[in-house]
Length: 172
Image 1 (cartoon, rainbow, N blue to C red):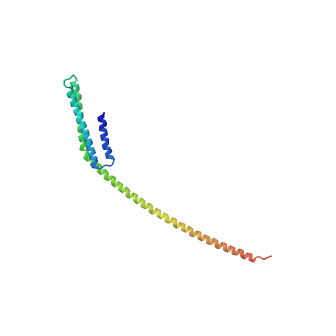
Image 2: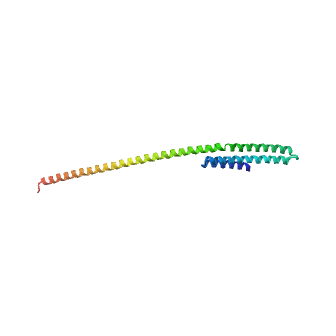
């Protein structure tokens, strides 16, 4: 059970290193170290099987011990081969991480460029709308001034008419 936990933690550690944004060389080293660790675990399992087989020699359990030891040795050999295969794939993993890093960098650059374009368009539109608002405010101001002048002229004319009528009205 302890070996399984160790194996899972070492594989998990190498995957965490891959995800955390390391370079291809770092990923390659991590996968290679994981492969070496798996291979060492396989060798240890195989040695355990050999020790069990030697311990069972000359006892009543020699056949059973031999069969169990043989199974353990085969398991150890299989785990060791797995470790070698993982180590062999380390270079490919490193290259894949480098390629993924390049793609992420390109995507980041494209996103930054797009955001700059959006910012520029937003600033332009804001300036355009602000200019229209200023023009509209100036138009309203001019129209209000004209309306006040017209109103003042009408009031003056009405006042003149009232004065004229007052002058025409006979005095008692």
